[in-house]
Length: 145
Image (cartoon, rainbow, N blue to C red):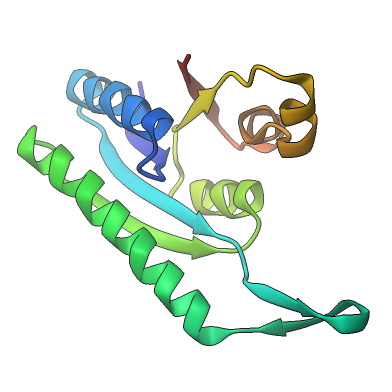
């Protein structure tokens, strides 16, 4: 069934729910698990719309995300599942789908939180919805209310 599962993991409440669901699926299907966290490129905007890349901010963010991934992998290991993890840099959906292709993932698991206001839904957009549209494989969206 699912031999390679890719979990988009950020350590949030929705990510924790996705991790638990992913853990159950992996146990049932004896799947390989890979966790990824996506870090956007950091650009500080200066006057006149000029962006400046700050490598120190980017490195701190990358280290923080690696800590989140390490925690997720530790939780999976405590439940008897080996997992690998990697911090990706770029646009979230693009990076997840590119990585899914790279590892020939059969399933992408992502958490989703229903947003109450229409303004919040409009402003944030839906990563899970966009991911479904662009994914090279099945997508499991876990819902947190």
